[in-house]
Image 1: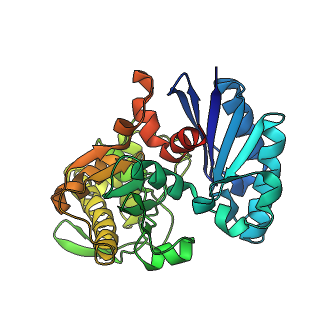
Image 2 (image 1 turned 90 degrees about the vertical axis):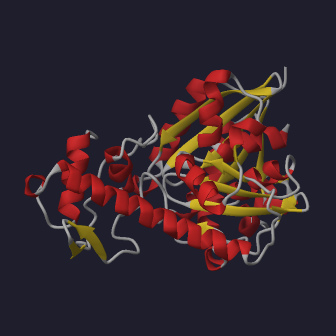
Length: 340
């Protein structure tokens, strides 16, 4: 029986999806903070391989080359290729390079630009197989990809991170790792506009945890202060971000503050979406296809845009217990299917 594993090798998480018997049967997401050292990636591979088992073919994409463990992206791509090749030997291993498709490790040396941070393109390419026109939006722990599909193909104006950010196609907004000071100077609190402390006191995960919206198992990274992930601890971190103690105000006041942070993040994504739609016209019937651990936010985006919402998992045959994980780890799932 043909077995294929799609790997999405990130700087914070390693994600992998196993395709077998015509469907995705297993998906894993493992924390791998490469800024702590490359041994984190080796550990994550060991854990993932133990959970997924071997496969006759492996297909990989990456964003890990962005990590400051590497001097530049070229060095990062080549090092990630080297590590993946060693970890997944002797299985056949291919790397995704956007419109050029799958290439082997040797060919990557002349196509590092195409291989770097191409995971969004793999997901978009799979969506394009199902819809002639759509807006694919993947909100993960750190970033949001906004990918227009036109005439059954990925229709972004940019490809590199810099190009995509300039065109609104890549927004640094995620539901777990985003810093609350990003893009904001003042926030409303108890009837006053108060400044934010320009420090890393809280994450977006604290916001969505406080609102009761953070999906189970979405946050696999340590908290900003190293304390637990309870509602009370998240409220304390949010208070510290504005120079307060949690005892200074009622729980309701901090919940309202969390709602403001969530709305501000959604506005940032909406702004990027409108910039994209000003460049690529999509008919009104074109749906929003949502993926990532933050797709509960993308459902709100679809409502604001007055477009139908389709979950990425609806496009993928999978074991019933893996449906949510298929969407959480859309690039890995898409790679496994594209490689098949």
